[in-house]
Image (cartoon, rainbow, N blue to C red; front, side):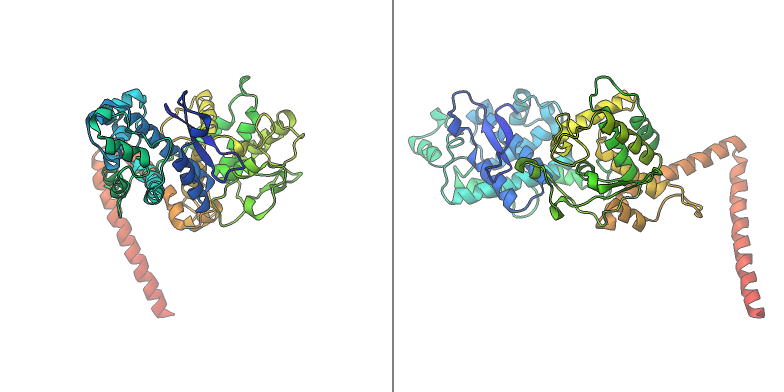
Length: 473
């Protein structure tokens, strides 16, 4: 961001995140954006999950960076606008960047270097929800007459356009907290979205591709069988982590929070791995700030169901990780560590995903939009639902309710998203049929149709014979 630092709050604070201004001439005791701190505290008191708090904090911080930059723009200098106007401009800014037709969005896309466009799905869901929640917090403080020292003079630079009374009003009340108290209230819709255009675009069809893409099973094997890079100090740790995700289909945070006491490895090479809610047990050795980063989405069973060949690859890399990279001189028993020995689950998600994509490139796997560590869980779910050989069954794939259990889904609806790859299976059938027809010629279409009707007649004859046999008994 150009104007702010988003930082994790110290453990002495109730908030999870703080927003600090970068201005050089601002006293340190005025750098904290108090309304953002209240917003962060409200999320904590409402028991938002840690990952949700981080996503919301990042979304609102970027919005405030846009708002602050807008306060110094030529567009705002020459136009009277309210919060609802800025929200509309922000939607254009996020979706279209430097190609936005809105003059403010276009101007700020250049000054804020908005090169990567935001998807309508992201704008219509987490970004919309986080900014709406933030504005609701602002409204609470605006109605109580709170004056924020940082944003109290947000539009004070428009001196030549404002009367003395207006300037006094700006000093009295922060613009974001209600420079015009009805402005925030008018900006929050009672129903619907802050960005209705993106919402309509996102929901115009009943079905759309799922955001996270699974990694092809062949690419997955290549990923965890790649040669060690001398540049990667924790190579076997990373390969063990990816192999575990592929072998069990667990969520990334479940794998990262795995402890030594959760693994039972037998002498014959078999392994049992259990995933347990950290809130239901003590977690010795963690600092208070580390413990705050423990998270849990929930699963139906702690038991995992391991698939070949990834379980063997996991155990192979795990042994090398313990032999060459793992530090036993720590006061915790979390399996996956950072290079300094502290638990890996405390690392930033974006840095973990950056490392993952580097490994994809090293394995000559195309890095496309939608690929992340979570893709490995989707690989597992797609494989066991659609492709896994099942003894005694003519068709591959486990029943969906079994997949629901082994994936830890509370609802079958979460499992059904993996069935979207049925179109790939159907496509392979169609491709096989088309190749057969191309090889045998167009007359084979008539023959195929005749064979279909013959099979139907045979089924009818079989039913008639079964009825006749039943009558004679």
